[in-house]
Image (tube, rainbow, N blue to C red; front, side):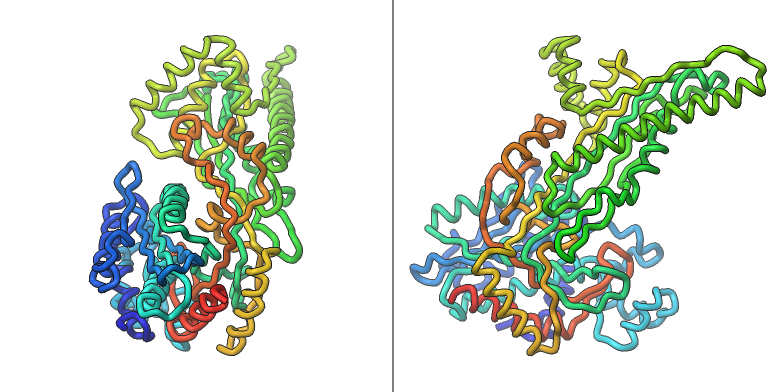
Amino acid sequence: MKWQSKQQLTDLLCQLVRFNSITGQEDELNIVKYIQSLLAKEDYFSQNPNHLNVHHLEDGRGVLTALVKNGDAQDTIILLSHIDVVDVEDYGAFKDYAFDPTYLTRLFKEQSQILPEEAQRDLENGDWLFGRGTMDMKAGTALHLSMVEKAIHGEWDGNILLLVVPDEEVNSLGMLKATEVLKNIQEEEELQYKLCLNSEPMFRQYPEDENMYLYTGSLGKVLPGFLCYGKETHVGEPFHGLNANLMTSYLNKNLELNDELIEKVGKEVTPPPVSLMSRDLKERYSVQTPVTAVSMYNILFMKQTVTDITEKLNKVMEKTKHEVEAHLKSKYDKFKEKAGQIDQGPSINISILSYEELYNEAVNKFGQEEVERRRANLLNERQTGDRVFSTILVQDLAYMCSHLAPMIVLFYSPPFYPAVTSEQNKTVKRLVKSIEEKMKGEGANPITLSYFNGISDLSFVGETTSSEADFDQLAMNLPMQQFQGNYIPKQKWAIPTLNVGPLGKDAHQWSERLELTYSFEKLPTIIDHTIRETFK
């Protein structure tokens, strides 16, 4: 076998990393074809070509499935990984070498002083490989390929289904497509899915955390957007209008790192919300104040529902409304003192709306046909990604309903990840206990968490606490769902989930790296053990 030793796995990882599979780039499909070609050389897939397939998304990217059946066995383990990576602009002068881990690591050893202090220590003391995707998460794909190879050689009693998806780093469209594919394969091959095993890397809970982790599920994520619609004016007459940038400034102050949106379940705590986009929507420079601006926030959750989160966001919007109105009054009073004016100044009353309410207002005012005509025209002219296009859709409705201005409109944008966990599943509880003992035998002292804290595609196959009503409410306030309808999972799965992954550091940073001794010497035996225990 060719993918079993530490060196063999390292070589395979380097081959995978060399593909520039940034989400949306050509190599995101090419790497899938490459993995398909590697597996096609195996006698098993030569004899069973219908078990090795690439299932294409509408945009041409592919989901790879490779099923290794063991006779008439029905019990099946899904091995899940993603092959897309984030951009490499953060590498700066080393950008051209980000996908050549061997050379990049050698460069860093020659210039170790440029690295963060912890990365320098790892270079000196450990067996680390640097490069984009080494940790997140092509090491996981390499490990899963080694398990497929063992399955082909009859190592286990059940079936192994390799699932390799694109687009995890952006919209998880690959995994949303995969849920349909998994259902079809299950029915055609009469399979029973016992476990979906992911191998995302262990994420640290705090700086320089040296603990090892297992995860029985994955955090949920929503991406709320806030369209702030003010009132335009000339900069020479600032109190005749309301600058949308002022509105987003207060909104950002109130929402960034807001502890009310931190969730604690047991000993696990979600990170606070952070802004992923904040800008005005003025396309050209002029001395007219910006009339619209947008902010989007990353919010992670465990047991909370979208309804819970929306209620908290509405409170933030109400606080912002009152603070902006008070700010304007206070500043005008100061201006009036200096200018010697005696009038009371402008009266501002900011409306608070959901996207659903804004949409209904536009329909009531102009009719369903006109609203849909405008939306169809925007779609036909679309040249932007989901986040920007979501904003455009909301902004257009706001222009139609300018009589409600000034206003703050809450909407949701892709991607959406349900929170899932199998912490109470009997099979997973038994597995966790056994894996913990196995890891201790390999010199690790693991901590088991209910939720993987980096978000993952497990969200679309695991056991979720979100209700149908929660999904429906989200759909009514997620503009893109009404166009394409594939951003909220349709298939309600209940496949037990587990994440057993390699050791790495600094995902999504230019110092991203994988520790090779644990990841490619000890972890393969742990994953093998996990598979054997699942089939018991």
